[in-house]
Image (spheres, rainbow, N blue to C red):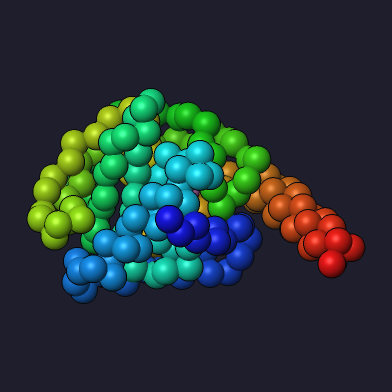
Length: 175
Ligand code: NI
């Protein structure tokens, strides 16, 4: 089991645009396992490769209660989005402690490769639809707070940068 460091907003690397995965091979499957370990450890329901500073189009998701339904999306493409929209509170492992409302299509269909390199189409609604869209945004370099007002974004930046400085100071004092 390997835990990967998660980038924290406003780290500029979260805005890099991910490139398509070229081969679903042993290297990629090892990365997928590490990303699931990292996501489960952090108690998240989704993680995009961008968040662990790998800029390839790879997403891992598990929205199940039992935490045993692994969903892997490689090179995902949006096929369809519903006109109906929903607004719900979102959080993000890269934006710790912040939850805020984002409006998105209520249902989507996405085509992607799975971890065996098989192409499949996934129809999603509710939490899964939101999660897939949130993670696909990460691959485009977009963090959910960018849907919020500039005022809120500014406050979130200030708060997270302060938390980072305090954590760094505590580490320095301990060493
Ligand atoms: Ni996120």
